[in-house]
Structures are given as structure tokens and as C-alpha cells.
Length: 471
Ligand code: GLN
Image 1 (cartoon, rainbow, N blue to C red):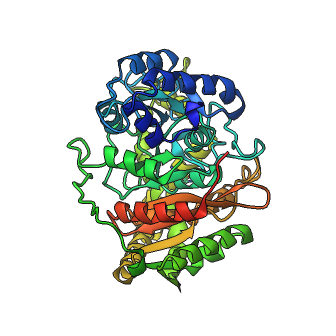
Image 2 (image 1 turned 60 degrees about the vertical axis):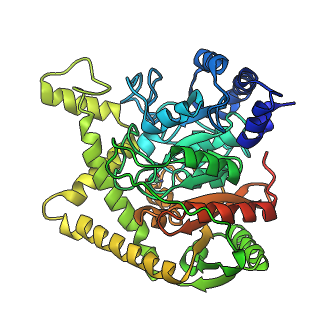
Image 3 (image 1 turned 120 degrees about the vertical axis):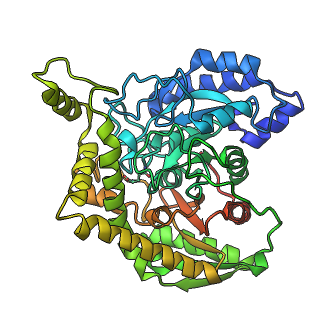
């Protein structure tokens, strides 16, 4: 039996029955990575020794993920394991501590298999902005895996990890999940601790799981969520757990997001909607004009926060420092000029501009007003509807280089994912089919704050109906 083909829940069941051991799981994944990752390029670091050792000592009675390894996006701090953010700036940085999510996973008996490639500091939608390596879409090696968590989605899709932990600021979990045919959840802002996540835009960043099944995703989410004293934005949330009655559900499909999608994506979302309708849900098409401005607001707000968060990389306290310089100003300027990639510098400039005197009101303040309007619009919808069904992306995975020279074309890829981000709402992407060329298509379920349990329940139903077949 090839253990890499099993879901997390299947592995857990086999472990509990003593049919397999944690060492066998670790060995199967390390072999798979050794065989496959030369082509895919999902990993920046593979913890060969650490994984084997941890698997030998694993206490498989601790939880449903005990004895099962996790792959981690390289912007989440892992004690003793390099955390690079796929940047030259943090290349070689070894955190002295674990992020809270890693602590939680470890106390549940999981251990770190390796660190995954991404767009530098989480900025991008294709993983082409990694300063370290290229990651290919496992479905078509000429295409991008999506981003910024491209390594995470590709690793899970290509059976190089049983599950991954990643971050989503404007779509970085959901969009690559859609491009690679896997399940990705961006939880409610504040439901999972960000302690130990390298900040991009602190008011939007959120950690979540990438898995091959919805049930696996729910399992991981329930382990990592909850209040954390080290992140004051976290909430002790109550997740309703009652069985849902699909015939009482009202689901909205937003025309603005449907209009942004290509014909093949639209077709699959309509199919998904009719499947839910056949199960008894009421589906209505609604218009939410406010959502059209969400993308512009997102790029102003996220860049403004990024310009401030990334000020700490000054060559003094963190990361890269040039060897030759005249004085301290020259040292900082040169270190930042050489240590950051092109897209990161673009965001810093955009953000600094939007926050500067004279432009603050016209850009940043206005973007915050738009954000408020989007939040209010969602509130209005969730007064009469339980969930929103939408495309995750406007199209399927694109080819390398296709968007590289037009940053705004790349930004437009996020049109369907940023509305939930700027409103802090939970949103899950699950595969709902493939186009004629065999490329995966993802559907997004967006819910009211802290409605993860409802999202998972409906996603499980949809997953059962769709019968998506992975690689
Ligand atoms: N693609 C978006 C961006 O470049 C989202 C990134 C993210 O969610 N980390 O900002």
C-alpha cells in the first residue's frame, strides 16, 4: 500500500489499528519527496533527519493527527528549521521559537516534514516571486501552482505531504488550492493565532490548512484554532456543531464574481450550485456592487501595512546585510535594495505612497472606507443567507511568465478571493471539477464570521456530490 495516497483521517485510522506506524508514514513521504520534488519544486527545506527521529518517538495516542507529519509554508516560524519567506532577506534565518500553530500541531503529536516555497513574503499569485526556486503545477509543469502558497498546494496535490499549513492575506491559501485541485481554508480573522507568522499585512493575514479532503481540513482547523495569549486579535470562538439541514439553507451566488470568471470556471460553479439545489438548498443570484472595489482597496491596505511591517528589515536586526558600505544609511539602503525582490519593493513603494502626507486621505483612508462598505454589504447578505458560493479564481492555472510583466494583471487574479479577506470572513476553496484540458477548478464557500463549521458541512456535501478525482 502506498501510504502517501491516504488522507490524514485514513492514516490516523490505520495508525490507531496498528496496521501502520508513524515511521512508515515518514519514510513514505520522504521517499516520495526524494522522487518527485526535483520536478515539482515545492520544498525549500526537507527535514529528513528530524522527520525520521520525530516519527520514531511519536505518541500516536495524542490526537487524530498524532504520528502524521505536516509541511509548513516558509513564512511560519519553526524552531531550529530555517524560515526564509522565500527571500534573500531572510535566507538562512533560523527561528529560536515555534509559531503558535506549530506548537499546537506538535502537542497534538504531529511533526514538521519540511518548509514550502512561496512568493517572497507572501506577495504574489503564482509563486514566481520566490527568490529561491520555481514551483510547478503538478497538473501541468508549464503552469504556475498559484500563490503565494504555491509550494503548499503543489506538495499536497502531488502527494508530497499529507497536509500543509499556510497563510492567506488576500487569497494565498484558496487560489493555489484551486489551481492545484486541493482544499484550502482561510479561517475567520482572529480564529487562528498569527504568533510566529512573518507579517505581511497584519490586519488581513490568517493561517489555515491545505488538505486533499474537506474532512481532513476540518480536523486540522479544529486543532489550530482558538484564543492565544500571544496574539491579542484571537478570539475564543464558539463553533456550532449541530448537524445541518441542507433544505433550510439559503445560498447566494454573487453576479459580480460570476461575471469575472471564464466560461469553463463559470460552468463548474453553476453545476456546483445546481447540485446544492438538488440537495434542497435555496440558491439565489444576487448583486453586490460594493465588491467591485474590494480589489483596489485590498492592494492599498495590504501594501500600506506591508511597507510598515517590512521596515524592520534594515540590515541591523534581521536578515541580509551588505558587506561594503560607507555609513549606516548607506548600509540600510544597500541591504534593502539587494535583499528585497522587485515585487516586494513595488509593494513597499505603493504602501509608503498611500500613507504619505497629502495622499493618505485620497488613498489609504478611502480604501478603509471601501473596506467598511464591503463589510456592511456582506453583513446585509448574511442577514438573509447562510453562505455565498463563488468561483475561487477567474480562470484556471496560467502559464509561467504569462502575467509576470503586468503586475496589475496578476493583481486581478485575486478578484474573487480578496472580498472575504478584507471583510475578515471565513472562506474555503474546494475542487469542483476540471476543464477540458484537465486543469482543476475551485469553488469558494464564504460564510459569516466564525461559521467555519457550517462551511465545512456544506463543503463535505458538495465534495461527495462532485467526486473530484485528484492526480
Ligand atoms: N496575491 C495576493 C497578493 O499578492 C494575496 C497574497 C496573500 O494572500 N498572501 O497580495
